[in-house]
Image (cartoon, rainbow, N blue to C red; front, side, top):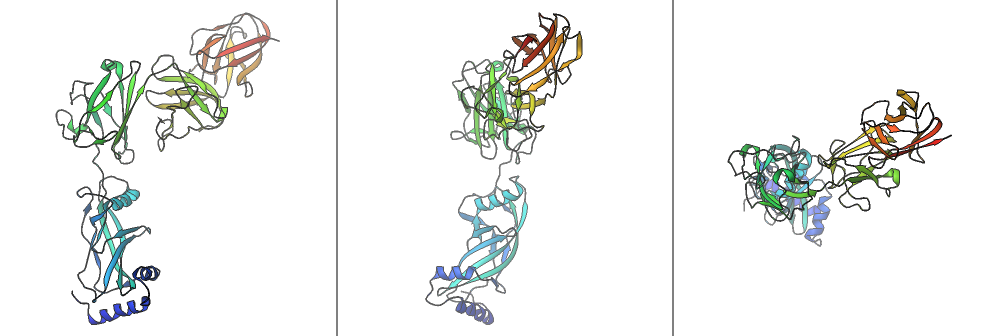
Length: 465
């Protein structure tokens, strides 16, 4: 074993002599020493080893990635280095071996917590400490600050992928089925989605596919995403075809979701029912309010008073498959996976609610006023009579004088825009956007109550005063 200089041997020996008594065991000595300030040993320093690219090594929880080296100055006879650690500038401690190895998994996780998982070289500085023992005594040695250049472990994610399979004759130049995250940074938003409309592919009972990166279109299969173990996928075409089997006959679309960092994938079969439901604070989270989809295209609308957070769900009587706001995404994005409650940006009030399950979006238009207009209201089609919202009855109401037995309509926010409410039809079936005026068969003083809900369920009552 190489020897320290005489003065260094004496200095280190003195440290051990004062660290603890001979009756202490090694672990008790270490505990005591760790509470003391570290000492510097001239000539005994840690050094950086150059770029640490965690994408070129086998990253695991084991301490198997070389992070730093140590000068070859030897310790006195009987003195052993028991362990080491890196203490980064933010106080994070990363355990290390005495020959400078750390857990690649822990190092990558630390770098990602600061910079994210983009595979670019990042610089962090930490101080390397060693713990040395001799005869039960211990001392903490400061081996100096080291700047580490680290590339975190992460896949190289393309900006977009395209499904290639039975849905398009295995033509990997075809771009009909794009798997994307809407152009976001894939290391900040690794969730890529794609929607397959089953009518466009002949309503099959099963499909198979892979996902071709944008730079592989036209014949290069080497970078494809391929199926791995259940619910997982692999990069670089390392695996079989993705398979979706037993597709229900009433499925109108299949929504695929890939997490490019977790390397997981899943799918949901969507069948558009006539109604979905809003549920929230305004009904004590127990009352389901229907939204109607008139065209079986996944677009639903309803009109309700909201006074807090809310969500949407496919079924009136249960929460199966409910949707909410996508976490950490702009307001108006829907998800069924780890969703948040939706919220009101414009405060309590009466709203037109629009939900697009095909696009997985939601939006609100606040309706501050409703007017009854028409030939029966002195032939006033502009302002007519303003109504007041009754929160107890959940209706818009007013007193009016019908100058004749004629027709009326209801208009929201004083416009004819369907987004604000433009209601016509018949008294027992009022439809937003209808071109039909509502016939009324009385004249004189009346009380009007308008109960907007959704198409097929909205109605009004008119009683003589």
